[in-house]
Amino acid sequence: MLILLDINFTILYIFLRNAHYYWYLLKEFDTSNLKDQNENVCGIFSNDINLSENSSSKEICKKFMYIYDNLNKIHKKGATEKTITDEDCHFINYWLNDNLKENNINSSICVNNFYDKLKSKNETFFSSSTKLED
Image (cartoon, rainbow, N blue to C red):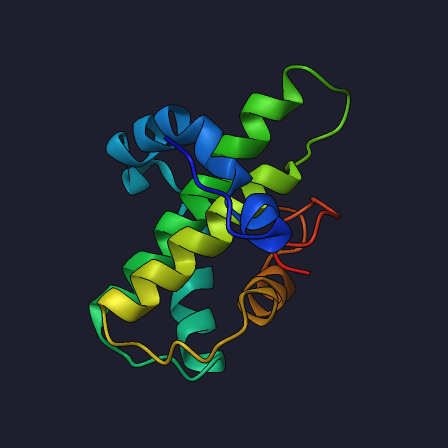
């Protein structure tokens, strides 16, 4: 049974209809396939955005890149350009906020700020024009 509280709730959590897909994506986390360049991006990025230097912030960054990369690969198969859907962005937003809070990392970081800073470190990797949060 789904109880809709208001239109914002409906829009922001619409990604839940694909929960089985996102759950599978998270279950299969394999950051070992990230290129060394991306490993370096997460190291530089963590220092630049003033995240704590503990290993969890670097892991969150690597997993964020893993999620983004895999969502782009899936959507690229059906289109000529890589793209992330609005639902994907809502999921990534939810996932990132949850992980920042779970690891007691400054959760006041705006998701778009997180993404923009990361994108500035590797523009070719982050090619989607879809915003993570409006």
